[in-house]
Length: 95
Image 1 (tube, rainbow, N blue to C red):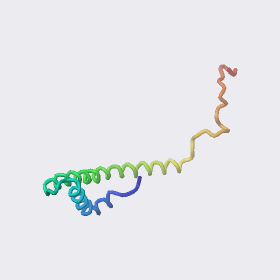
Image 2 (cartoon, rainbow, N blue to C red):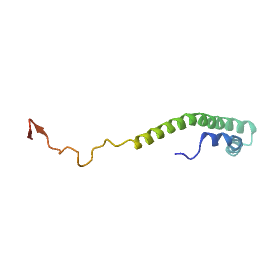
Image 3 (cartoon, one colour):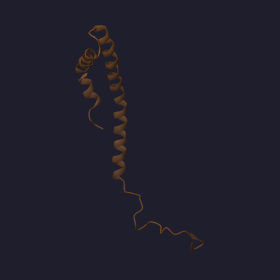
Image 4 (cartoon, helix red, strand yellow):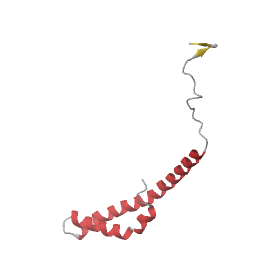
């Protein structure tokens, strides 16, 4: 989709960590242990997402480059002037 990049996500790590603890604070009872038990898995999921996004962006760049190369080649699609008539022929006779 191109909304953000892995580099941008890496720059926002401190904010994500604080945000995970704030969400943990709001969703758990007033206990630091429970807050931490919720915040750490959320932050780990964020890190896994950043790690996986590096591979996705690499594939996407390769796919975009392939599409650009394909667009630069002359088209081999049949136009209306060189397409078959749609009638079948057998031995020179149209069926």
